[in-house]
Length: 196
Image (tube, rainbow, N blue to C red; front, side, top):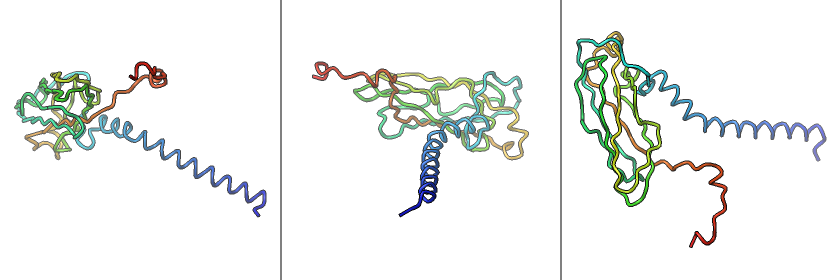
């Protein structure tokens, strides 16, 4: 039989283990938004930066930007860029469009993520306007044009690792996303007459 001191030690160990367990769960939920924020700010892992204004410098040097659109299983959409590539001046602001269509017979919500290759170019690819990380809902058969306004930072030619890059690929992938409901709606009782 354990003494009072032993029981207190066991209680402290159990409390510490539970604290670590719940702390790890909390960190796992916070990891995705924190990592996303880190990548947006630094351009790490091919993630482009979001900026509020265009470049004030345009170089007399061209760069090719290619576009790619994908949809994961579970989201019955057609999704593609309206044009596959553009050749533009470094620092020049360009707008292109992606086209999405719900090919199912029910309303579907998706959310897009993106990346840039080569990864080193992510720090220099700047978006002014984009549809990524936004819940997009399309009704059956509905179509939507989604703009992306961007430029390639002229500092790309100053970096030893990126100055020879001639082509950048911007790729978007749409994932199924369940629409969030207000807490009050989630707690509303279901009327039995309406279920029939």
